[in-house]
Length: 457
Ligand code: B12
Ligand code: SF4
Image (cartoon, rainbow, N blue to C red; front, top):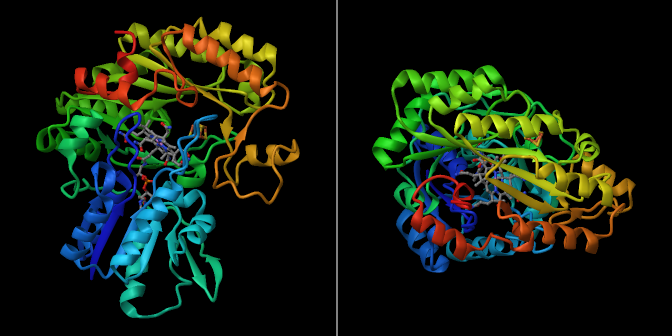
């Protein structure tokens, strides 16, 4: 069985990111003895030609398409990637007549809608390793009843069927990365990526991550993480790693074990991660620094106590300020994601946020206006309750939660004004310090790590 895996993502802002999920699928399929090729469209200048060449070369019996991003999450300048993905799938269909199976985080959030929109028959929700192999086994067996394939969404007599969703065991071996262009990701993206675990146990009101990866932590062994980091550095000349976990410092003991394993190995590599201001002590930051951590991105979300609590974040404003202060002391650069206009936001909570932001000692604030609404989240329920959305509305086209307690024009104006006068602000939706051109220039000067770290240098 010959399999072609296509990564449809072409986004290069804030930088190109390697298709890690597809590597996991390819790794498992190769272990099972299938012939696997990857077509990564990230750096393609001619999708039509590249798809044609890959298909002629691989002559696949099945094509898997990874769809990472639905849209850029940026209000009011929001861009949907889904029409571009449909175009890619249409080209594949025009070149080869074999089953196509969709997957990836974007697909997993809108499986039914994307299957309909792209007119495809199969897709896999969530973690794909086990499910993809089960699907391929079914294809080979010529049994057309797909009921038993975990996580599969499929069409039967015009109806879309959803099989049971399970969360896979995490991969306990080093994944192979030869099938993608690691050198270009290191050059243009400034980093490689590694996952140390899956799952998140928090329940923040808007978040899709527990739906994508489940609520249970499934940890990867620290020695494997060290080996993957060594491989990226020594085999692929990648000097900086982004740990793609939702929250690196949860569970705390795992982050400690990873740092200790890196230190013990003697490997010298720089890295960055997402973290929560909860449980980020001076001791942990010193340990992270010693293990090579140079940048931390905090999902802080709001600097108003009431909005923070409405979003069900498990920390306070003091935790945010403290976390940033400790990062500075430890010599780690920090950035905070902040969303304005969340549940309960008023003119006075907005001004409270602005004055609290001035108290944070940080390198960057990545500011968003409004919060993208996803199905199966509390924010979705709230949006229906507050009449922001009709209950049956498809959310595939971007819809944002904007607090009814503050006029949108006022919100946009105030955030714009504050962002332009604060040099640490990046506001993608308002196009402030966030253009592809600016990121390219910065990357030319600074070869590794997140670019926000160089804003004020
Ligand atoms: C880390 C991360 C980042 C980092 C990446 C750093 C790096 N160097 O890798 C940064 C901060 C740069 C980033 C940026 C963005 N991100 Co981001 N990011 C993530 C995060 C937390 C993890 C992604 C990851 O690597 N996962 C690990 C891999 C192994 O999992 P995976 O790719 O999902 O693959 C599994 C399955 O999806 C499936 N699968 C994948 N492909 C396929 C294919 C087939 C055929 C099958 C069967 C299965 C399958 O199997 C895989 C293994 O189990 C996710 C949230 C999450 N928990 O998923 C958001 C997420 C992917 N990001 C998202 C978005 C939107 C973005 C941005 C567009 C935001 C922005 N405007 O800047 C940019 C786009 C960047 C780009 N160039 O594409 C969204 C995408 C969905 C959506 N809402 O549109 C997510 C899901 C978060 C969310 N809000 O919901 N991101
Ligand atoms: S926002 Fe972060 S901490 Fe909250 S549920 Fe999502 S991934 Fe977990």
